[in-house]
Length: 171
Ligand code: S3P
Image (cartoon, rainbow, N blue to C red):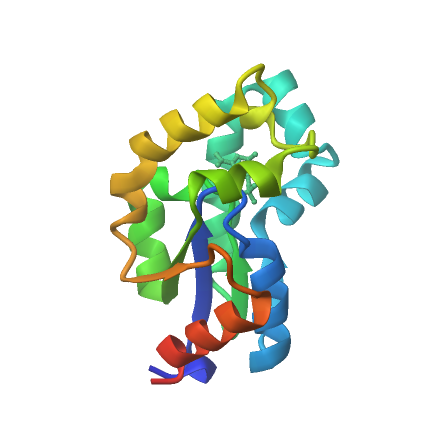
């Protein structure tokens, strides 16, 4: 599998490092970096938080699906997806068709640590984020498990994770 023939698509729960790792992986491979959430915010001229509160999650998911499809028409990019993109089977099929799909993981404690203090994730703006993360993780685990490649980021540096991913995509 060679990076110059494909996109690298990073999926995984919130706080598993997709953005930091994605940017560093793009630098390391020479591919362009694109964040689906950023694209969505540009198109809507609203933050993800506003989209959720003003138009609802269903509206966001439709938008996410359209933007994913459009971004996957291009090549040679590292695509940083939002944590819920895997919930749609067609999204998953498309990501596998158009790229090398890699799922990042982290422990519940690490996710909690990495996401706390940031108010921009509407799904985690709840009184008990640990419980919400745990519930969402168990619901979503089967969807993340469908990805063909998996990298645990718990306790690892961004560089280490990038090296592991390069081991997969350069093989
Ligand atoms: C979501 C994850 C977020 C963002 C939105 C919904 C999710 O992206 O797309 O808040 O459903 O897990 P990150 O995974 O980049 O935080």
